[in-house]
Length: 417
Image 1: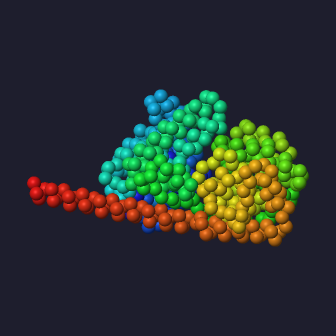
Image 2: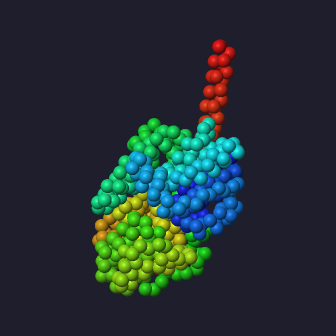
Image 3: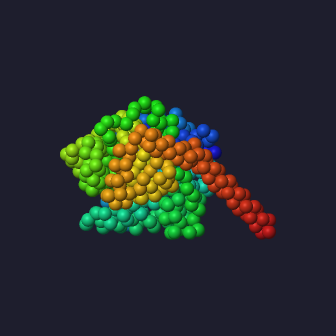
């Protein structure tokens, strides 16, 4: 197949949520097909990675997205009734590149990574289209509206309503919609019972996220770790909640426990958490794996979350037990037999963390094996890539069959004319 893959951020380096997912999808499809990538770039530093991405696909077309201009366009879109998420990622220069690409080559299908790229696929006619929503973003904005105060609460709720309508139109006009988990699929399916909707879950690079590749043992004193981009609201809310409500309970039993908040772009409220005793805010690090394997437990204390949490899967792949809220595991079907624990109130969450901090080496190794085995069974990128490839092949085949039937109907009509 000749595939046009559109991404709202350059999917390289694969170091963040949707970039990780898009890169591994492209890499998997490129093994057997010609994948042409079109992507927006919002960080000038990422422009230097275009050649590296080009090694994995047939071609790469990018357009820089200026942050200041994006906000102006989003503000204009707000008053014109468009979703902010869509206006933020519109560039005329990118649309022209896609038009030129479509005119110069014949594509078997178009894959859009995130709803904001659907607006560019509408430029094509007669080509099957697949949208990877990843998550139902309109639900995220609706929840944000509940978590914030005026005026942001009003803007977030408005965005949730507008984006929900946009998701509905996109689902109706595309041949297939893809979500990252069964939970997200059910959300969209309730709104679109007749839509063609499937699941392609997130995976983990099991060779990279492997404890034996690092050769480091858990640290002393015992350590707790949270990994994530630290200007993202759900992550910020999670670590603030942990430090305020849970960590004091942990320290009552394990006074010397250390908490590492690992991830780039920490906002001011996160940096201030380092004022707490034994709380370290690292900022950007070259490699998160040493922080994972030095820790006795990884925490995911989310009160707001959507889709599959890569940070949870990566910790499990490294053999690190995870304690999280039910929100953290919504897209992951792991149980306590897979090295995880769920705590939805501070006391139960703290109790699980303390258990892992105080566990002996044998218990920790058992949890490590369980966690790693779960990821190996359910979250190999190779398996998820094969599923995506199969879905695309089905879409293309069905489109060709319908097209052939349509042509025959036209020929029959002409014969009787």
